[in-house]
Image 1 (tube, rainbow, N blue to C red):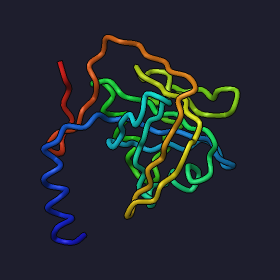
Image 2 (cartoon, rainbow, N blue to C red):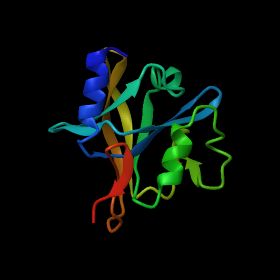
Image 3 (cartoon, rainbow, N blue to C red):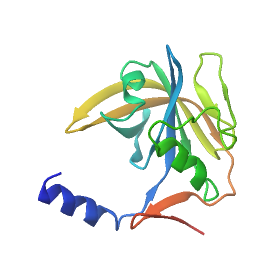
Length: 159
């Protein structure tokens, strides 16, 4: 990483970011990856954006998947976040991962307080990441738990 890239990473650590997991299904089964770059893009039409590194293990599936899900995590889900961030981990067989596939095969994490089931609207390459734009088709929202947040390289919560 260049000197300016290192400075940018250090500066952005002071910007709190919510933590989520993006999942999809591919020919070899379910994939998922932890993300902290997620935002709404539009309300009319409803669109969200999640940034995926081209080197992410889930990217080969997300590159062509017509559907995906974004799960926003609560403060008690640091273990799940770490599991889906770890390269080579058995994400789907781990006891912390309670999940099921929907009728289209998209894996849903059952304990996430927010789940957005999305149709892929666009993929826009920007540097070493891709903006995965999704059109929410179904929203599950169970209010009450504080969100999982990263700030200054550590997990924290908003209370």
